[in-house]
Length: 415
Ligand SMILES: Cc1ncc(COP(=O)(O)O)c(C=O)c1O
Image (cartoon, rainbow, N blue to C red; front, side, top):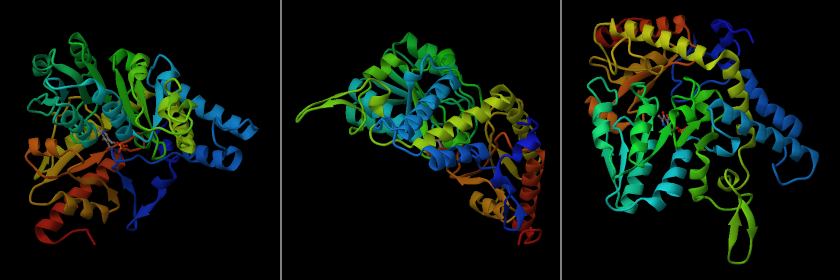
């Protein structure tokens, strides 16, 4: 593959589309990314050449499908620096992975007086399961405060995480402000108190190099569709001894060892967490996505996205009437920029941009506590991926200026 960024765009068929008669500018990557041809092809190859159910068959197609599926488990393990592929559980995505930890691990281990530490910046997927576990066990949630710029206040985290804390649940990159959470430091604090740390990597995997052993994460969750793969596939990483403690929360075919009339025994992790027929083509697409990202290089992707994000921050901050949220320019962050235009609801702004072919997100971004912390009910959010470029940023800035003109005077280039 040619590694220049503009050529990389050519690998993504959807980026060649027009929307509302304008060339598409896709800046909603935190919701889901577009897919390169090799990812689409991985699924097509499966259905055209070796579609069969995994594990169950002795026939050649089944063996081929099983081998391809298990190869992705090894690739995923390497991708995030796991010790072994046995620590990789395939799931439907981050939400599914986090619920597995909540209801398969925390529910059975927490009780009254125990604490679960989260931050107000969490996506609902990394908050609501913990609220439910707290309700069911009598444990309670402790919120680790944010500093004024939206970054986790590590000093206060040091104070609030104590021997009552049993679990710390934090995103590595937050989905509204793009803040990068110092997971390694928080893991150290959690472990000093005997607590476990579960990391929501939905906005990190595919954007930053991830090394779960270096972070010392106990559990790490991510979604394929936010890192170039298909929807409906994701990963739960867990240290093997913790996966051994995890109770499956789905039971059925394939995860069992043997079944009697009243009792059943289960396979060892990770297979005991993969009940029923799995999303085989999704897993294969995840393998292709990992290979695509590795061919460019995780460091290189992070560097490129960081450069573009800082550039976008500068440009948006320079526009009058625009408020940009989160850490100030120069502070490293994930490729996510939330902003508002004075006097214009973000949904109206997003609609005005859509008419110009520009896709962004508007709303609460499944992070209502964070929006309350920001003091607004919604923001506009532009989020980048490896295929975005300077022209995309220029189009967004021009689009916001057009919208500003239109909403102020009913003029400008918005049909
Ligand atoms: C930080 C974060 N966590 C979790 C999720 C949930 O991911 P999924 O819908 O793929 O399960 C998202 C999705 O936007 C997210 O941004």
